[in-house]
Length: 215
Ligand code: AMP
Image 1 (cartoon, rainbow, N blue to C red):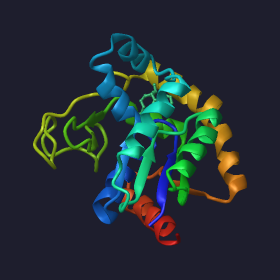
Image 2 (tube, protein in one colour):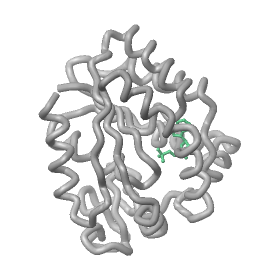
Image 3 (tube, rainbow, N blue to C red):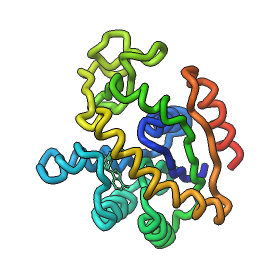
Protein backbone atom coordinates (compact mmCIF):
# COMPACT_ATOMS: atom_id res chain seq x y z
CA UNK A 1 0.00 0.00 0.00
CA UNK A 2 1.31 3.46 -0.95
CA UNK A 3 1.86 6.23 1.58
CA UNK A 4 -0.73 9.00 1.30
CA UNK A 5 -0.47 12.79 1.40
CA UNK A 6 -3.74 14.72 1.61
CA UNK A 7 -3.98 18.19 0.07
CA UNK A 8 -7.20 19.95 0.95
CA UNK A 9 -8.78 23.18 2.17
CA UNK A 10 -9.88 23.32 5.82
CA UNK A 11 -12.96 21.20 6.66
CA UNK A 12 -12.73 19.24 3.38
CA UNK A 13 -12.49 15.94 5.27
CA UNK A 14 -8.79 15.09 5.64
CA UNK A 15 -9.39 13.82 9.16
CA UNK A 16 -12.45 11.80 8.21
CA UNK A 17 -10.73 10.20 5.23
CA UNK A 18 -7.68 9.47 7.35
CA UNK A 19 -9.89 7.77 9.93
CA UNK A 20 -11.35 5.62 7.17
CA UNK A 21 -7.90 4.58 5.87
CA UNK A 22 -6.70 3.78 9.38
CA UNK A 23 -9.72 1.54 9.99
CA UNK A 24 -9.85 -0.15 6.60
CA UNK A 25 -6.19 -0.48 5.74
CA UNK A 26 -4.23 -0.02 8.98
CA UNK A 27 -2.50 3.22 8.00
CA UNK A 28 -0.41 5.19 10.49
CA UNK A 29 -1.62 8.78 10.72
CA UNK A 30 0.39 11.96 11.19
CA UNK A 31 -1.60 15.18 11.37
CA UNK A 32 0.53 18.29 11.74
CA UNK A 33 -2.55 20.10 13.10
CA UNK A 34 -2.95 17.51 15.89
CA UNK A 35 0.79 17.56 16.64
CA UNK A 36 0.79 21.38 16.80
CA UNK A 37 -2.30 21.52 19.02
CA UNK A 38 -0.55 19.14 21.42
CA UNK A 39 2.60 21.32 21.38
CA UNK A 40 0.48 24.48 21.86
CA UNK A 41 -0.74 23.24 25.25
CA UNK A 42 2.70 24.27 26.54
CA UNK A 43 3.27 27.23 24.21
CA UNK A 44 0.98 30.25 24.42
CA UNK A 45 2.46 31.97 21.36
CA UNK A 46 1.74 28.91 19.22
CA UNK A 47 -1.75 28.69 20.74
CA UNK A 48 -2.52 32.23 19.54
CA UNK A 49 -1.09 31.58 16.11
CA UNK A 50 -3.27 28.47 15.66
CA UNK A 51 -6.27 30.42 16.90
CA UNK A 52 -5.71 33.08 14.22
CA UNK A 53 -5.66 30.51 11.42
CA UNK A 54 -2.26 31.62 10.07
CA UNK A 55 0.32 29.09 8.96
CA UNK A 56 3.13 27.98 11.27
CA UNK A 57 6.63 28.57 9.86
CA UNK A 58 8.06 25.97 7.50
CA UNK A 59 11.11 25.05 9.57
CA UNK A 60 9.01 24.15 12.64
CA UNK A 61 6.75 22.01 10.48
CA UNK A 62 9.59 20.20 8.71
CA UNK A 63 11.29 19.46 12.04
CA UNK A 64 8.08 17.95 13.48
CA UNK A 65 7.43 15.86 10.38
CA UNK A 66 10.98 14.55 10.24
CA UNK A 67 10.82 13.55 13.92
CA UNK A 68 7.57 11.60 13.63
CA UNK A 69 8.56 9.89 10.39
CA UNK A 70 11.85 8.77 11.88
CA UNK A 71 9.92 7.07 14.68
CA UNK A 72 7.27 5.47 12.44
CA UNK A 73 6.70 1.76 12.16
CA UNK A 74 8.33 1.08 8.79
CA UNK A 75 6.21 -1.98 7.98
CA UNK A 76 2.98 0.06 7.79
CA UNK A 77 1.99 2.73 5.24
CA UNK A 78 1.36 6.23 6.58
CA UNK A 79 -0.81 9.27 5.93
CA UNK A 80 0.47 12.83 6.07
CA UNK A 81 -2.55 14.94 6.96
CA UNK A 82 -2.02 18.71 6.73
CA UNK A 83 1.49 18.74 5.31
CA UNK A 84 2.85 20.04 2.99
CA UNK A 85 1.02 23.36 2.93
CA UNK A 86 3.66 25.42 1.10
CA UNK A 87 5.89 24.73 -1.89
CA UNK A 88 8.96 25.03 0.35
CA UNK A 89 7.51 22.33 2.63
CA UNK A 90 6.73 20.12 -0.39
CA UNK A 91 10.27 20.33 -1.77
CA UNK A 92 11.87 19.68 1.60
CA UNK A 93 9.44 16.88 2.36
CA UNK A 94 10.68 15.17 -0.80
CA UNK A 95 14.20 15.26 0.62
CA UNK A 96 13.05 13.91 4.02
CA UNK A 97 11.04 11.09 2.42
CA UNK A 98 13.89 10.25 0.10
CA UNK A 99 16.41 10.13 2.97
CA UNK A 100 14.07 7.82 4.90
CA UNK A 101 13.61 5.59 1.85
CA UNK A 102 9.85 6.05 1.81
CA UNK A 103 9.16 7.97 -1.37
CA UNK A 104 6.46 5.66 -2.67
CA UNK A 105 3.39 7.83 -2.17
CA UNK A 106 0.24 9.19 -3.77
CA UNK A 107 -1.00 12.75 -3.24
CA UNK A 108 -4.75 12.98 -2.88
CA UNK A 109 -6.36 16.34 -3.44
CA UNK A 110 -9.79 16.66 -1.82
CA UNK A 111 -11.99 19.16 -3.65
CA UNK A 112 -14.88 20.78 -1.82
CA UNK A 113 -16.89 23.91 -2.63
CA UNK A 114 -16.23 26.83 -0.31
CA UNK A 115 -19.90 27.30 0.73
CA UNK A 116 -19.98 23.66 1.87
CA UNK A 117 -16.82 24.17 3.93
CA UNK A 118 -18.40 27.24 5.56
CA UNK A 119 -21.51 25.18 6.43
CA UNK A 120 -19.28 22.68 8.25
CA UNK A 121 -17.28 25.13 10.40
CA UNK A 122 -19.49 26.07 13.31
CA UNK A 123 -20.99 22.63 13.98
CA UNK A 124 -17.78 20.59 13.89
CA UNK A 125 -16.94 18.72 17.09
CA UNK A 126 -13.83 16.63 17.62
CA UNK A 127 -13.05 13.78 19.97
CA UNK A 128 -9.84 14.77 21.81
CA UNK A 129 -9.11 11.10 22.47
CA UNK A 130 -9.65 9.21 19.19
CA UNK A 131 -9.82 12.34 16.93
CA UNK A 132 -13.07 11.27 15.29
CA UNK A 133 -15.01 14.26 14.00
CA UNK A 134 -18.74 14.98 13.99
CA UNK A 135 -21.04 17.81 13.03
CA UNK A 136 -23.84 18.68 15.44
CA UNK A 137 -25.63 20.78 12.79
CA UNK A 138 -25.57 18.38 9.83
CA UNK A 139 -27.77 15.31 9.51
CA UNK A 140 -25.78 12.14 9.07
CA UNK A 141 -22.78 13.53 10.98
CA UNK A 142 -24.32 14.07 14.42
CA UNK A 143 -23.08 12.01 17.35
CA UNK A 144 -25.78 9.96 19.12
CA UNK A 145 -25.37 12.20 22.15
CA UNK A 146 -24.45 15.82 21.28
CA UNK A 147 -21.49 15.90 23.68
CA UNK A 148 -20.15 12.33 23.59
CA UNK A 149 -17.98 10.46 21.07
CA UNK A 150 -19.89 7.43 19.69
CA UNK A 151 -16.63 5.55 19.24
CA UNK A 152 -14.88 5.96 22.60
CA UNK A 153 -17.25 7.79 24.96
CA UNK A 154 -15.00 10.85 25.50
CA UNK A 155 -16.47 14.34 25.82
CA UNK A 156 -16.41 16.10 22.44
CA UNK A 157 -14.73 19.49 22.03
CA UNK A 158 -14.96 22.34 19.54
CA UNK A 159 -11.66 23.47 18.04
CA UNK A 160 -10.93 27.08 19.01
CA UNK A 161 -10.14 27.91 15.38
CA UNK A 162 -13.49 26.56 14.16
CA UNK A 163 -15.08 29.98 13.79
CA UNK A 164 -15.81 31.91 10.60
CA UNK A 165 -13.06 34.50 11.12
CA UNK A 166 -10.28 31.94 11.55
CA UNK A 167 -11.74 29.77 8.80
CA UNK A 168 -11.41 32.67 6.32
CA UNK A 169 -7.71 33.10 7.21
CA UNK A 170 -7.13 29.33 6.84
CA UNK A 171 -8.98 29.25 3.55
CA UNK A 172 -6.96 32.17 2.14
CA UNK A 173 -3.74 30.47 3.29
CA UNK A 174 -4.88 27.40 1.38
CA UNK A 175 -5.49 29.41 -1.80
CA UNK A 176 -2.25 31.37 -1.59
CA UNK A 177 0.22 28.82 -0.24
CA UNK A 178 -1.16 25.32 -0.78
CA UNK A 179 -2.88 25.49 -4.18
CA UNK A 180 0.49 26.12 -5.93
CA UNK A 181 1.66 22.70 -4.68
CA UNK A 182 -1.05 20.94 -6.69
CA UNK A 183 0.73 21.50 -10.01
CA UNK A 184 4.05 20.50 -8.40
CA UNK A 185 2.67 17.01 -7.71
CA UNK A 186 0.67 16.95 -10.94
CA UNK A 187 3.90 17.37 -12.90
CA UNK A 188 5.41 14.47 -10.97
CA UNK A 189 2.41 12.35 -12.05
CA UNK A 190 1.41 11.34 -8.51
CA UNK A 191 -1.63 13.57 -7.97
CA UNK A 192 -5.14 12.10 -7.74
CA UNK A 193 -8.30 14.09 -7.06
CA UNK A 194 -11.46 13.16 -5.22
CA UNK A 195 -14.39 15.36 -4.24
CA UNK A 196 -16.22 15.62 -0.96
CA UNK A 197 -19.17 17.89 -1.61
CA UNK A 198 -21.94 15.52 -0.72
CA UNK A 199 -23.70 14.85 2.51
CA UNK A 200 -23.47 11.13 1.73
CA UNK A 201 -19.90 10.25 2.57
CA UNK A 202 -20.13 6.70 1.27
CA UNK A 203 -19.70 8.08 -2.29
CA UNK A 204 -16.52 9.91 -1.28
CA UNK A 205 -15.16 6.80 0.48
CA UNK A 206 -15.82 4.84 -2.71
CA UNK A 207 -13.73 7.33 -4.70
CA UNK A 208 -11.01 7.09 -2.06
CA UNK A 209 -11.02 3.28 -2.23
CA UNK A 210 -10.65 3.57 -6.01
CA UNK A 211 -7.58 5.79 -5.64
CA UNK A 212 -6.00 3.58 -2.99
CA UNK A 213 -6.64 0.30 -4.79
CA UNK A 214 -5.43 1.73 -8.10
CA UNK A 215 -1.98 2.05 -6.54
P1 AMP B 1 -5.39 21.44 10.67
O1 AMP B 1 -5.66 20.61 11.88
O2 AMP B 1 -4.73 20.66 9.56
O3 AMP B 1 -6.59 22.21 10.20
O4 AMP B 1 -4.29 22.53 11.11
C1 AMP B 1 -4.59 23.47 12.12
C2 AMP B 1 -3.61 24.62 12.07
O5 AMP B 1 -2.27 24.14 12.29
C3 AMP B 1 -3.52 25.37 10.74
O6 AMP B 1 -4.52 26.36 10.62
C4 AMP B 1 -2.11 25.98 10.81
O7 AMP B 1 -2.10 27.09 11.68
C5 AMP B 1 -1.33 24.88 11.51
N1 AMP B 1 -0.70 23.94 10.56
C6 AMP B 1 -0.96 22.61 10.43
N2 AMP B 1 -0.20 22.06 9.49
C7 AMP B 1 0.57 23.04 9.00
C8 AMP B 1 1.57 23.12 7.98
N3 AMP B 1 1.93 22.06 7.27
N4 AMP B 1 2.15 24.33 7.75
C9 AMP B 1 1.82 25.42 8.45
N5 AMP B 1 0.89 25.43 9.41
C10 AMP B 1 0.26 24.26 9.69
